[in-house]
Amino acid sequence: MLKGIDPVLGPDLLRVLAAMGHGDEIVIADANFPAEANAPRLVRLDGVNATRAAEAILSVLPLDEYVEAPAAVMAVVGDPDAELPIVDEFRRIAEAAHRAPVRIEQVERFAFYERARRAFAIVATGERRPYGNLILAKGVL
Image 1 (tube, rainbow, N blue to C red):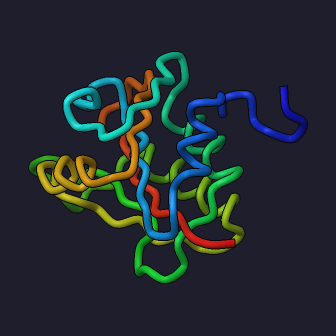
Image 2 (image 1 turned 180 degrees about the horizontal axis):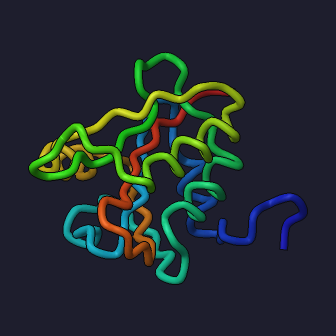
């Protein structure tokens, strides 16, 4: 155990987060996301939902302040302007951790998959809500 570290952040995830550099992205993926097929590095958090994973990760991960949107979600297929309740939860968590407004970009499904393949790592969660996927860009301290 480490003092002050969220227990969701096990050694594998902490190593990945520490190894990331400025501008690297990490994907928090829901249970339906093809994480195994797309991950350059994969960390499994099967018993954790995506919002809880985001909360833990953002407790130690600074967001990139040099990009327009340091966070991205998958746009709803057939209704790209829709914003699901989970996106509001992601925004609230990101803004609380960042202590400032955070712009979250909506990314078309297949473009999201492509971006996930280029990400530093994917965290596969047990999230069951549709579109429970989030990309975060690491910043600097």
